[in-house]
Amino acid sequence: MVQKVEKIWLDGKMIPWDEANVHVLTHTLHYGLGVFEGIRCYEGDDGRSAIFRLQEHIDRLYDSAHILLMEIPFPKEELFEACKEIFRTNKLKAGYLRPLVFVGDGEMGLYATSNRIRVAVIAWPWGTYLGDEGVKNGIKAKVSSYTRNHINCMMTKSKAVANYVNSILAKREAMLGGYEETIMLDTEGYVSEASGENLFMVRRGQVITPLTTSALHGITRDTVIELLKDRGASVKEAHFSRDELYIADEIFLTGTAAEITPVRELDHRRIGVGKPGPITQQVQKDFHDLVRGRGKKHQEWLAYL
Ligand SMILES: Cc1ncc(COP(=O)(O)O)c(C=O)c1O
Image (cartoon, rainbow, N blue to C red):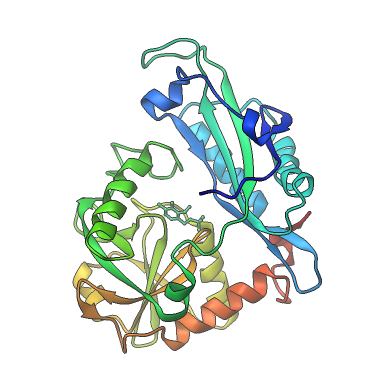
């Protein structure tokens, strides 16, 4: 259960949590046209809270909407402020943040262009998505039998509500099979991403990540590339196959919800020595230092409340 807080921002107003309801004819509920973001706010050692890379998440939200021909009826600056305000109003020092843009009720049918575009901003406390144990010791994953959305079927650069049916099918298949996460291949058979995370592998000291052809442009992915650069390591972006993952020394997944989660086993093959490797552990440490304001670089990525 999501841990309830006091208020939700809906269409420009702070309203009580229990009153943030919509009509059953809400268009997005029927046809899946909507976009959203997943963002985290962290409390630093000094007690100050900051939303991590808020501007980049807001920019991606507007890009996602633009791709789907949805016009968000608020300026970016107002949503940026609403994201901070939701933490202050609910007296939350840290947590997960979910801006959601959806098509309201009115007309039905696919070509319903007159319905109001609605916006909600919700925040709640949320721990590590793939579990503390997984973050510490690594997870068991499976290559999905479902193919990642084809780039000319779903718009993979849009964080669109409907794209997640593909992710949910893959995630359910993995969980029901006793795994914790799933890695998806694109229509050509190359590794794309996990159901809700991007992926990195390390082989003989080289860090490699799939091109984002069919994957989301992850903000954590970009952060990790920058953190590795800061340490003088380059990341190669390339197409590669599932069996290259089997012989990787390290694999880790990156995402706002999952943060940096190591993979210790894939399709019953042990990855490396079967526990988080040195590069994964370094990235985890650098990431947690950064989001808690301990890093010297990238201060501009922290939007203090
Ligand atoms: C499908 C998918 N890929 C990758 C990511 C990672 O993106 P980010 O690091 O921006 O959270 C997410 C999470 O938002 C996702 O849902």
